[in-house]
Image 1 (cartoon, rainbow, N blue to C red):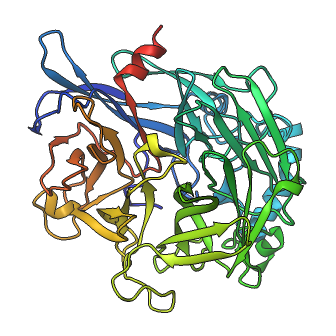
Image 2: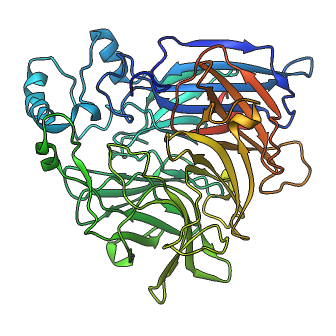
Image 3: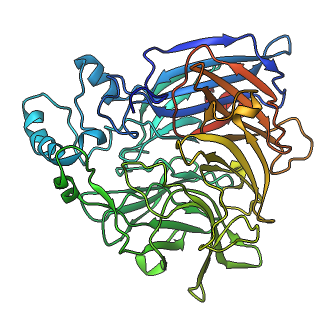
Length: 506
């Protein structure tokens, strides 16, 4: 990770952006927030997933004179873990990058002794309050939630000026005590927070829970799967929940292969990938229907929904890897895939989303990308459009945003980041593009809004915030802002509307 745009930044700031190209749309009032790892002690020896959560944000608002204004903010998520390590001025907790090879085994064995001697932080499995909160975000009950695989959600209050106030871990009346995955989901209609998390050390290896719109833990279920796996995402429909039991297996014995390179996860191509579908409020494993397919892995789902003509048919759009390891390889480029599951016949189909005459798994369409997004008001419902970022298969960087028409199974638009900013090919790299609706339109269409992300100029070492028209996919940005500092690469972001920000202030 050294000497790349994954390197952390050392300070926090809040700066008004007064010069930019283009126009801030009046229908774009709110805040773009992106989460990502920013190791406070540096990144030497760390994995991509390590690092303390840091929020980078652009607050867009209407001033008292009616003009649109912009403000850039970056803040650490002030977790107890971060505060404890900053006070000690050293790392106190184990990180993924330290779990490599035989040296990693030795570190694991010595960790309890270091705890006894007061040389390490307490990582009690029964207390899910030691996460870095560096992966994704959700907005639930007037609070921004910083999420990571291993811990409870961490609550952050959003302030009027776009700044953040870190609060605490959320356990919802001390009733929730399980890992909450970074891709737990908020239902846009019911307001429920649908939660799942995986456990690598003991059964049940997966747990599922629902927190209702009033903050009450209303449902929970132990999901029985045969082995500990990395389950980074799941999917929901209006009435069903889909769990992804993929063969990226936790296997500590793998660390014994060498001294300092092998992680305790391996992709086992001898094990089929499985999808477990259950009613949203399932009370036992008897209500699950399982579907098997060839070995593969899904880091991120785009969306799932029930077929309008047959609600017992479930459609899932995802990014599918043929093979994946935690020692990331640029050749591991995912394809965009549509799975259909028939709960009555127990049959499933798998096909590439884009049909250009080569729509078979043996002759895949050459579109590779990740970080799929939709208009979030369509989560779990039938959607026509989706967006993802296209990957440079040679460098592993993300170089363009692609719009898909899922009904027509075609590419509906593509914006090359470098071309959009008038730079040489491959110069501009970016990340996940988030959709924000245009709030000034009288009629709301699914793609009626904007796409936004942070871009990095690899030549000039500068960062930009860019907004494009999501409907037209016009190459020229609606607005382009050069930022006062380099923004490191990160993971997932979201758009928080002005209405949501104001509701959280009262």
